[in-house]
Amino acid sequence: MTNSTVPAASALWAVEQVTAELRETYLAVAAARVLLERTSVGCAHPAVRQARRSGEDALDLAGDAERQLSDGVQMLRAEAGHETSATIADLVETLDTVREQLTATATRIGQYPAQVTAAAQQLRDTADNGPVAETASSQWFRAAEQLDLMAQSLTSAASALGSYTAGLSGAEAPTT
Image (cartoon, rainbow, N blue to C red; front, side, top):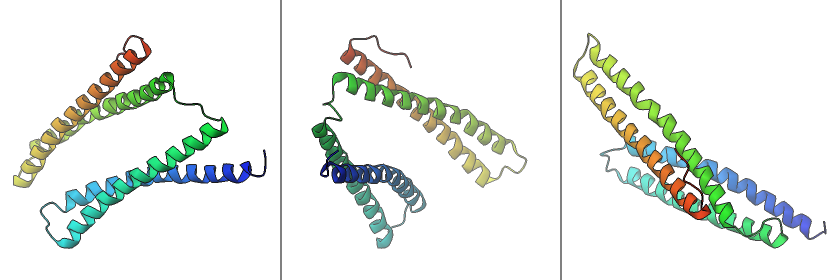
């Protein structure tokens, strides 16, 4: 390793670390933004509207920064011969990984509707079934339906990716 490659490798490593942390913080900001949206429904205060806009802007900027950092890392690796140009096989492998993650998430989410429905029914069956309990259980039943639709959407996305990658690779589409 020459003297010039050591600083480049160190810089590359530092940027990879930042990129990994940026991905993690992106998820945290996205979760915080969802929580803000939920808790501030109907609030028209300028500070809350500014917080919403700033959260959206932060996510957009983080996404752009992550793409730029990743692109730079890939260019440096390709130039150093550590990473060859992406091939169809690489694309298929990546998309298969995404498909597997979508399938696993769909399976996990698919278990929630029954749990939420059971809890909603249990709440309705209690002796003290007042208007608050009735409203909450109705919301939970709707949430269970939405979770079921989410699982179906994730399954559909995984299936679509399976068909696409099968077409790219000339193989039979995997079953999900």
